[in-house]
Length: 258
Ligand SMILES: Nc1ncnc2c1ncn2[C@@H]1O[C@H](COP(=O)(O)OP(=O)(O)OP(=O)(O)O)[C@@H](O)[C@H]1O
Ligand SMILES: [Mg+2]
Image: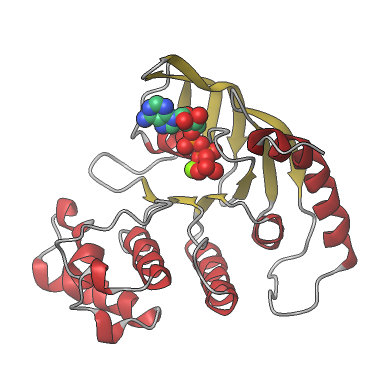
């Protein structure tokens, strides 16, 4: 599946007038590509993912998907920044929920959901409610909820943000494994430059107010990547380059004077 974002612009009607959150954002994502997105807070990363997911309509421009599955099959799932679980449903029902609209019967929905719940070490919490989980556990549920319907496109909005670094590494590896095995397209937003470099084929560096793409940075590291191994020297160079692009904007977005 290929995705083309053409001159996407999004203007929100905010309380104190129109707010231009994205302006003229154009890029494409190839079949099976893993694209990372980094940029300062408020630069429109979540907005961009929602436009691609079809959860928001662009003010102008368009998103074209080629090779997408037929009507009635899942195209994409989004893992939300705040995990977006239904508080009144158990962990198992939250994970199984997405399968409901595809005509899969209840027993199979629960079987499939349980396999994912087990895989991220939450077997004992299958019948717990989101409010009874730690933040990191809630994030794991949010992630497997997106995986369970097996869509060709995964849109991930800082999915590992609240995880401890060990769990994060395990889930990053798991994500790369699923991505490799099931040949998905992943668009992955993160505030962690190291994480973006570890995972991505290419990183889109965004700038804020209104959100635009500043630069596309290719990541020429071999696959499969062993995340627990020592980093190649090239990673340091790429990191400093991206940080150079972001530093000034991050200061501006925080109003930090230097
Ligand atoms: N529903 C909305 N109504 C009005 N303005 C909005 C809405 N959603 C987002 N915005 C504004 O659009 C801009 C981009 O928001 P968005 O959430 O896409 O940023 P982001 O890059 O994901 O930020 P963060 O890194 O903090 O998650 C912000 O200025 C935000 O205030
Ligand atoms: Mg966001």
